[in-house]
Length: 223
Image (cartoon, rainbow, N blue to C red; front, side, top):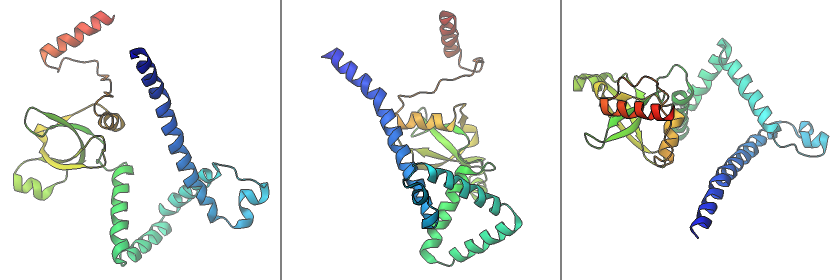
């Protein structure tokens, strides 16, 4: 029974990620295929082919995104986008939804933003205990003026759902910057700490002596 359970769990670990990946890809492709509804009925693929081709909506979506980005980055396009935003800001409920969505997209996708670009280690919920957090902002004028310290705004996600969490202002001197990537930290959070990213740093001289000796011993045994 023990071996049977081990084999069953091993099979689940193989097929569950595959099934979830296929399911999410199908949902995403089906959602993008709905962009074909933008085309007139006579120009849709099923009208002149006689059958639908899954995935054509993905191509059309990419073309629309590229054309929109090309338009929005020139002078005429920026004026049109600004006019559209001013129009939406006059609608009470739509204004709140649109501004929140825009701010979130700018934070996540903008290359110039420093938000969610660094994985940090902060002492939380008490001194001596550490939690993974993401840097969200460094320009905290009033907070820094009130506290008389250089503080960093961090987002401390909950596990296994990283979309909820806490905003914590931490003094910069008390923050430890990690080498792991954002996606690696998210995997660790979602897996309840089971999936731990491998640390690729070769220089262990900055580590505590006992830990450095242990890592060096591991390296010698592995070689």
